Image (cartoon, rainbow, N blue to C red; front, top):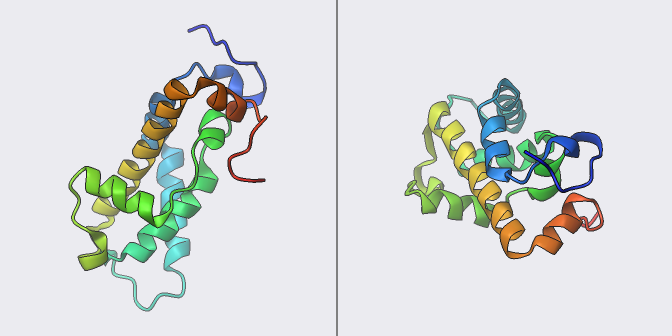
Length: 149
């Protein structure tokens, strides 16, 4: 592919497919290590860890801290950290039972929920690219930082 965006740092390989980049990251060993590290950190201080019926609170904490592990470049710039409302909406969109009631069944379901949330974030960012290309380009090139930094 021939990229139109300016070539700098990790951006040089970005050719405009955030969903594909996210899917690649979500299927990588880096993602696997990152979510487990974030989950372990979120579990610290909780009373008794069974890795079954995992609470929504742990999901929200893990999903938010996982954002700090996104690969540098387009994903790191275009994907915001998910908040509780976004996480619930993403899970509801694929028919996942409300985790506020019984939590997530086990670590397999927990990981799947994280994949759903981050895939949904990538689709939203991709929609921003197609609907507001000027805004997306400004974010990608660092002219605008949506994180307020």
